[in-house]
Length: 275
Length: 182
Figure (tube, helix red, strand yellow):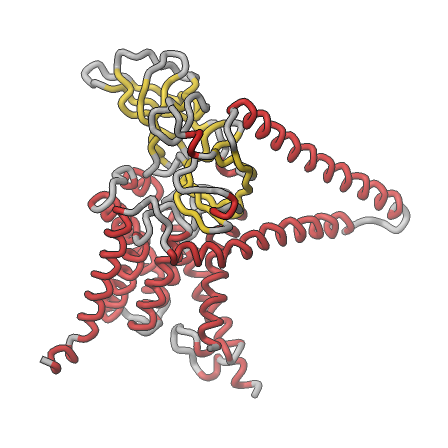
């Protein structure tokens, strides 16, 4: 028996390891709304590094900009250009502040419109793969973030929190293939389930008799139990109707540009869940 | 202790590159999968036991930083590792070409396994559609990264003594810069 085990120890170890991995995944499938200790620890360790990377990039970018501007400046007009550059830098700084202010103002207005308690957070990292769509935020359970909390910006819905560590949280974007939310077309009130499909969304189960046109706004229906009613999600980009089908195929372009996400609002679920 | 610190630094670097550097520099929906390329690299040049355990850990780190259910990459990456490790007995590992086609094979295997487990055990049926549309650009980017990784690591191993113990293809003695300058 021992000889047999010794002979096949590699195969036995690999099978054992794979069974353990399969078990971990199976167990987690039934406990999706929890964040494992491993994830909490890794998120906590990595959050300062990701914040640091964001800060370093901003600083290096500023230095790089200044360096490249210096190249080619002649001795005669150096002083004038220096002055000009400083003014420009200040102007750019002001422009950046103005844009940030504008974004925050819109978020604030949106927050007031919603009349919901919300927490502002910054995006500090993206998804580690190309197949899934998620982002990491710099706020966590110590700031009051809970699993499943809806995340929005002034333009519309972003996603929901799927993992929480004390000082970081991961948000599953609505464009992820596993994401689904209850929505309705604002004009015709046609209901359906919006599913992520990479860069776009598809509105499933929209009945054929409902009139849906390209350009119609799609909003949250408030029936999913996660998002409050009436938050914009996207605009209808394509509608396909076949007479023999029960439902029509509706492709929706999200309102939010996910490649430029910087600040978001995390809604408090107690109030957000009220339908 | 030194190996443990190096390993920790390596994982931190990988996560920063994967979740911060690639999305900002490439600004496209696709980004190279550094963890997958590293999995194939370890399967090719690493030891089966330590490599397998490291890949399992990398899988769980990847799960933490992606929108999946925890455990999906922890299951997928070791399967690819052991699959490639079993296959290399039948390929000529003296040239770098088999490494590249194993990366391409690994990319296909990864998306097949992710979609399969998500569909059979989970409820993410639409990953198939996304996967078929994005497989070729993903494989291309992974191959590009594989070329950079193999050449970069070989350069490190030739140049510095401390890096010589890193897993990789066998280097000739005259190729070792640090040995000829001792």
